Length: 350
Image 1 (tube, rainbow, N blue to C red):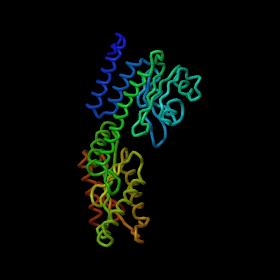
Image 2: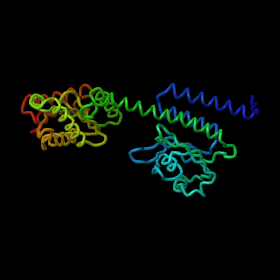
Image 3: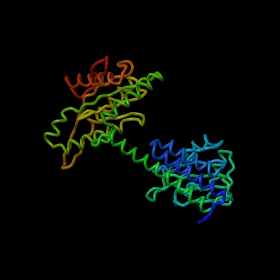
């Protein structure tokens, strides 16, 4: 039976304690930041680097960004991004292999611009990928850790901790996908009515706090039932999807678009006055009615819409009230000419 030296035994007990802490964090929280912070704190405690960071991979932009950074340069690092392939961390992200670099200035992969911007002096680096299903999700880098005590067993332990962190990231991505499914309308890809009221409550709170206005546009498609009756529900669903796309294309990144139900849509415009909201409503009306929708089977459809506009806090002081006001304005149009916009406290647009 092998015997451990007192130092090895202490080290082994430390490893067991760290595994326990990390496993407990992983199984007791869905908060990705909290789990990753626990993992990284334990890595730092065990390996004792001067500074360390965790970079997440942004797949769309093919970049790495500093999700967690510790040390005097942490604030600067959180504003920086590396291209996948750039620097030692970028190389690890691209190739999915760990690197131990005892002297970074002899390694052509080292990105000197990071040290120049942070005024930090990197001497050595341990860089390990966090992988799931052969895909790199993130990279952990330990700067200026004591390498004289870093051997195969330490690398095995570090890889094991990185596996925990990769599981946490994978779990967080899965939860995000589930949450997206619960707040997204399948047909149009817009948010659903359930998410509308949560968004409005948040917008009311934010607007109260910062003395902002925001506007709501309620949209109802005119004679949409005829589309389903004449062309069938598949064409109707495709038309709703196309309208959802056009609505979203008219909006800013900070705006929200929802399918309220059936052929009704709601648009929430943060930090938008009534006059500005009317400009958007006119643009939406023109976008929907101006161009025919080309469907399968050589079907070409032109659709129009009735719209109502209300603004917080001028017309309403709560989430439910502002929807009610915009809805009432929409029905004013619906019960008159259709294909128009009605504005709270002003009536039909001329």
